[in-house]
Length: 134
Image (tube, rainbow, N blue to C red; front, side):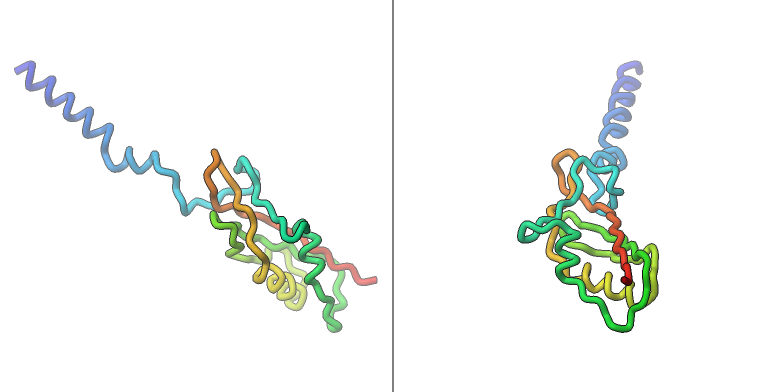
């Protein structure tokens, strides 16, 4: 009888150790979006030796019908392949300025993706774009 109890305890232990919940909890979640301060390496933008600000301002045009001064802040995700997705305006200056900023980011070249422990991950980033009318 004691041997049956030992076998039962061993089988129960094996089942608990290798249950689907335990196995899947050890696998990194590829859908998780990390904040910029959670990653080991931030996504890097380096297009034709330009940083992100230089690139955006080189593509920027000032529409004639904008008389606004202020800041638009865009939130975006750099996915594990370096592509920008999920653009959202988190601080608006009006529809014309917001659309201008979104159009700049919709056509942006790929980043080098962010990393945690050497693995590429999705990272949420923010970028403020200042509009100053002189």
